[in-house]
Length: 347
Image (cartoon, helix red, strand yellow):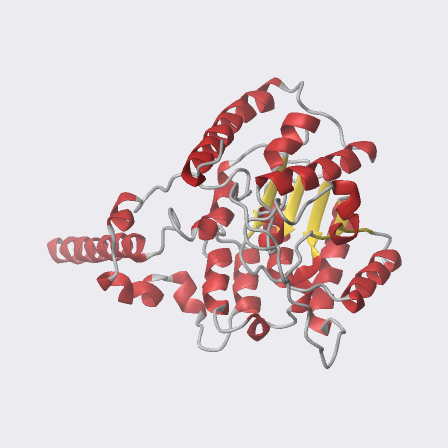
């Protein structure tokens, strides 16, 4: 009996040490590349959302849920991540439906350019991990990992991230210890706040492609997303966010128009709404047209808020519990704006 107890105790100690090492070695995304923290932050918000955004940086940098709440009483959350593919968006939708059923899902169609994982480029594994590691374990996460892995990746490395990150032992910083178990909030319901400005000058045109048709796998996952939303009674809105680059080809736009018409969906191309939204690419983008800054995001969000309200979404600002929760979020948002302005010397 004593030997058995000693053996069990030894195993438990080893497991504990490995667990602590894994927590220490995994990227914290608390500073610098904070986008890797966005997916996990969703689970801390237990309110029922009217609108869920799915997509890449074109959603988490171009729409501000705080404004949707303050001006329209719409409770929204952006489940966005860097280089998010259409299959990842689909499985994030599956994951979201484990917790809630929103009235509206908004999906950014730039992800259709990637048909299989290898299309994402040499950094696809890093992008995969910024999406997948933040998801809670479920069947949706397992399927997402299997659909997303590129050559050289192993499923077991997602189950035990220490196998992937053991080499970081020589790269550890004070932040790795400070945020070992808990990281500070870095997004605003999934929105990435920027107030600096860099005008969009000499934006490159798209290169000529051999084939402008989106791939079968990309369409298969868009079909799955469409079917799941219809099954759950969710209004699916396809959008192309107002980013000038990567280039959005007219041939791609036509395909999305045709898909939306065929499936009785709404499709909004914000690139065609510059006059209506009054986005100024000389002042409203922080990185020369790839993403909008706060001022641009406010303009786009106002258009979307008007659109959603006019088409039936209700104002929930009279809900006491939800309004109370938003008071704290608004304080955090306003303090972040002031800190960003001070950082860039903006009055």
